[in-house]
Image 1: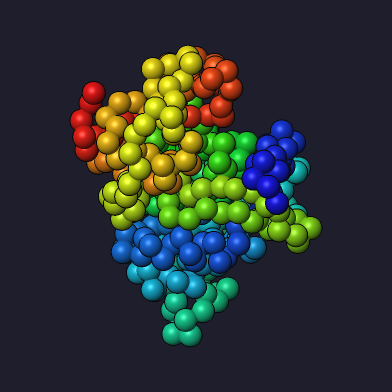
Image 2: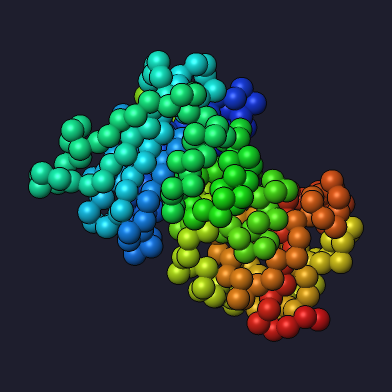
Length: 310
């Protein structure tokens, strides 16, 4: 499926406020294996999940000892309409607490999982859910796409570590990009392209892991080999910077401002590059970059810190 169509699926879901895209266990396993050491003695919260069907709860409960967790909390939203996190028809919002295997069978048995009812509907913005958030050290989940900005703002407000999934377009949200530029949020190791849905089918959707847990990749230099020339790297018509159409083509010898696709962030090392601005939310206002009369899709302005400013 073409990337345009993949993003369109999420965009349509956002417009319809149908946020029921469920993360596959294989995607969780593939990403979480990079952070194991950072979870030792931590309280993990999955607050946009139905623990009975959530692969996040499944992963952490079955890997509780392996990750040396202190406690696992999962919140199940009361199902009232389609704009919810749970695909079960829960009559009451509940939350689960798990402290690890007690009987030595290495399986999270029902008797080992404490189930408690919430007074409200389990909305992550409610006071009782915020109290659970305060207990957490790390939040891991796939929040509703339509509430992504609000969800991240809450995590930042309460100074929480997190590893969450957001769609590709989230990068260009004004509030999210500001956090990325300030090195308060960055991308994880993998993309997430396929989700389960209520009808059991996997919907294509290009998304990223957003986190403030440290990663090794954000300290690795992007290997550059191309040389700058005016033919391959034209100047924008409406801004003093050169166009670099692919991240891999960033010239090794150019010290000025360059416009790169937003997928650059997947390779971003803040020690190698300085993020200057996103075209839409800064220098160009609401406009896109133009090269030789041709309008381009969203660009991030960057500068190579290794060779200094021009």
